[in-house]
Length: 350
Image (cartoon, rainbow, N blue to C red; front, side, top):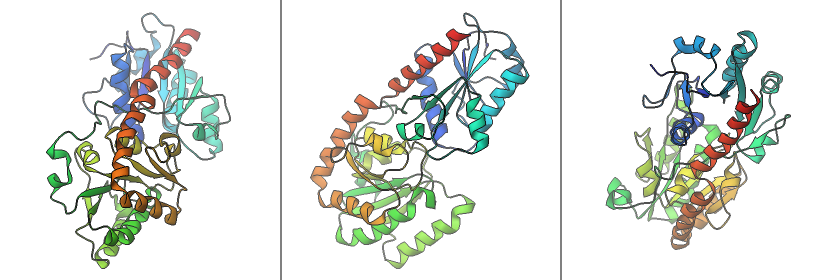
């Protein structure tokens, strides 16, 4: 069992299902460990390889770590903030509480109260920070550019998929109204008949709650006679090769927290058309790595996608620029280093 003596940061993860927060934790913690930070997770839903503490070790948090007067409890959800408050204020454990906020909406009174009890707050974008009523630091998420890399061989082409055409356009993420999957499908139904070299793929989980929504999209595709050119992949075990196979990625969300998929696409050498939900507008350089359109505006989304499909050579050049842009501005080590400064400040206060 992992000793807590050298652990100075605990990153709770109180959700079993995959989410954007899960993806962040999975990528970030190994980078933080590599930088020498004693950090562990606590909770379900994470790969076995991540360093974890067990629930039975919680009493060990009354003992201070070696070389530091406190530990940092780094929460990313309301229930994780509440649990941290319980540990610090009720059980009197030596903890400093840090919250990372990605939400781009006005917080409820309950959430504002939780945030007010934090010792430090991080916003994942300037836009999410604009909804906070407390001092905060903006630290944008990064991406592991060793995991997401450009196409390198035959397996990274549309030919390897057995799908028709010369170009793939994709939309990945949970299939639901919030994610704008219907906007993507509608655009494909309108655009693909004019672009016979293109095929569309959709990947992501369909929950029982949204099965009717997904079934409706498939019915629309069938009615348009495009069932072989707008393909639902379902959940795939490894999405990385699919990013590499794309000529264009589309992120049409109506609402988003931060949203990592455009970064994953650009790191893979794929340009992006995205709404301005989440932090998308802060990631994409207009007409250099892709295009940004107003969230929920179907006509602007369709026209931006169509423009990229009309100009495949220019779009391919944007893909090369995209990789360079992510390397310079969104490397995972940048996020980890910025968090290190926050951790060090909290640990020094004791």
